[in-house]
Image 1 (cartoon, rainbow, N blue to C red):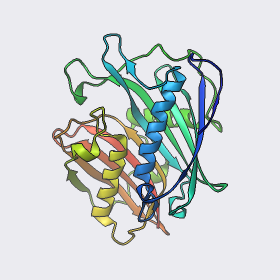
Image 2: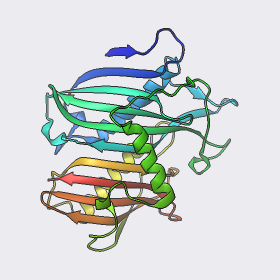
Image 3: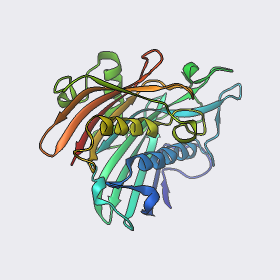
Image 4: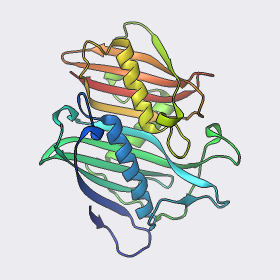
Length: 292
C-alpha cells in the first residue's frame, strides 16, 4: 500500500490518503461484475482504519470517557458513475481513498475506483461516532464527540466538496423528505409493495453487533429481485444514494417497502425504504439507478 500523509509523526493528522491495487477474483465478483456488497465492506474497513490514522493511532480502538466502545456509524453513502459490469476475473482494481473530518461530529471518505487507468466509479461515505447506552442494545445508540481529531476541518473532497454535499442532502431529506433528485420523487410506481426479511446474525451483522451498512444494500437488492428482477438478472448499479437513520437488534425483522420503481430505456430508477418490521421505524432510504 502506498500511503501519503499530510503531516508526520504519531499525532493526529488532517487528511489521510491511501492507494492500493487489488487482483479481483471470486470473493470480489458477482454474476454481473464487481460485487457492490463486497466493495462496500472493503471501503467501510478502509474508512474505519483511516479514522485511526487521522487520530494518530495504529488501530481504531475508540472509547468514551467511561471506557465504553465507540464506533463509526455510517449516516450516508453514494455510488456515482459506477461501471461494475466492466470488471471481471483477474482485473486489477485500484482504490484511492481520501478521508478527513467533515464537521465537528462527522467524518467522510471518498474512494476513487480505477481499472488500468479507466475510472469505474466513486464511492463516498459519511459517518458519525456513536455508542450504546450502558447495558442497552441498538435502540439506545447515541452520538458522541471524540477529542482525538484535529480541530481544523480541511477543505478536501473536491470538486464541489462532494462529501459535504452528500451530508447536506441526507440532512435535508431527514428534515423535509426531499429526494436527492427529481427523478426519485414519488410517482411511476406500478403498485405499493412490501417484503419482510429476517436478517441472519452470522451473515448480516458486523462484529460490533450492528446490522452492517452493506447488509442494507443487500436487502434492497433482494427486494428488487423479488419484485421485478428476473427480466434483467444482470442489472448493475450506476448510481446509488442511501441515507441511514437507525439500526436493529439481532432477531428483529426488516421490512423493505417499494416507494418508486420506474423503467426507462435500458435502466430502472427506484426508491426503497427499510423499516423495522415491529413498529415501522424508518431505518434507511435507498435511491438507486440501475442499468441493464
